[in-house]
Image 1 (spheres, rainbow, N blue to C red):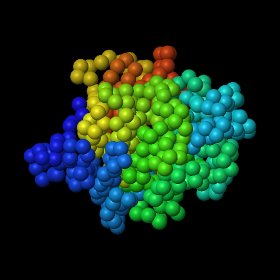
Image 2: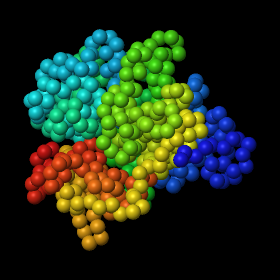
Image 3: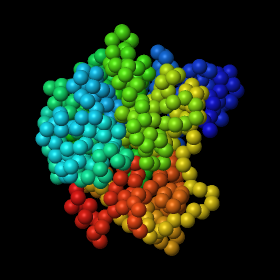
Image 4: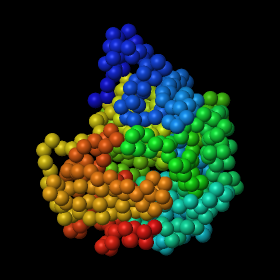
Length: 491
C-alpha cells in the first residue's frame, strides 16, 4: 500500500521523526522533500539526488547530497543529472512530431526511410516497422554499446553496423524485448527526415519550444551547468564513474541526455496537456500525445516496467488513476519519472549513484497522496516454496553486454551476472552472484533484496531447456560449452 502524506499540522510526519517537516495537504513543501530525500539517500548510498513534484502549473523541488564525492559540490534543484532511458520518451516525441507532419507512417517499414537498412536477418530487415521500434518488438539484439565516435556521423555508422551486430532473437512484432539499439535507429530516422543531427533536432523541436534552461546533451553542454558526476558502488562507498557519459551513437536511447528534475517535469507537463504548450502552440497533436499512452504490447517482466508498453511510455495498471512513466540509467546515474495525466501530477527523481529503488518509498507516498494511485509492493519471494525444473533453467545466457550463469548448488539455485563487451571495459567484469528461489515454474526471484528490490529472471521456450532468459530484454541460451567465447563471437 502507498503511504499517505500527513497534513502539515500533524505531529509525526511520514518518516516517523518529529524533526522532519510535514508537507502541506495539497503539495509537499521543499523542506519536507529535502528531509525525506536526505533520509532515503543516506540509506540507499546515494551521493546526490534531485526531486521535483508538479501538480497543475506548480512545481516544488529539492536536492540533497553532492554532485561529486571527490570535490563535494552540493547538489541543487537546478543541477543536471543524466536521465538515461527516459530519453526514449523524448525520441518518441520527435518521431510523433514527424507523424504529425506527414513524414512518418508508424506502420511503414523502417526501410521506407532508411533504404539501406540491414539487420543480420534479411527478412526482419524488410519487415521491421517504426511502431515495432517504438514499443520494443523489433526482435533484434538491443544491447549494442559500441562507440562510433563523437562525429555527426555516429548514428549513421551505428546503423551500418547493425548488419553484422543486430542478431534477430524473435520475428518482428512477436515478443517484447527492451531494445536500446532500436531507439538509436529511430534517432537516425529523425536525422534523415529533419536534415539535423538528433541532438540539434531535440533542441530545436523540444528544448527551445518548452523554454528549458537546464538541459544538456553531452559533456560540452553539461560543463556550462552544475552537473552531477555518476558514481559506481565501491568497497568503501560510492566511487566516481570513469566516464561522464556514454557514446554519441547511444544518445537517442539514453546515453547522453542530462537535465534538472524540474525541466524534466516541464516536458512531462506538455504530455499531460496532450501536446499543448502554455502559449497555445503545440509540441504534439492531441492525437499523437494520446496515441503514445495507448497499450501496444504486453511486457514480459516483474511489473517494475509496468504491464504494457505504449509508444515510448511505460504503462502501469495500478489501482486508481492511470500512470505513465519511464526509468533510466547510465554509468553511475539512475532516474525515475511517473506521470498521472488525469491529476495533472508528475514526479521525477534523479540520482548520481547508489540504489534508486531504496528511495522509491517517497515516490510511492506522493503517487498515493497526490496522484490517487495505489502503488503495489515490489515482487517478493513466495512465502511457500514453489517447484521448478532445475534442468530447464540451469545454463548460461548471453547478450553482447551481459553474461548470466544459472547454476544448481548444494544450497539451491544461484544466478551470477557479469558485464561483457564495451560495458565491461568501463565497469569491469566482476561477477555478482545471488541465491534465487522459484516464483513459479518459469520464474526465479532473488532470495534477498538487491538495490531495494528482488530482481526476477523469467525463462522462455517450450523445449526441455529454456531458450531465453528474459530480464526485460531477452538473452539467448549459450549453446557452446565455452560461454565466454560464444558471447565474444556474438559481440
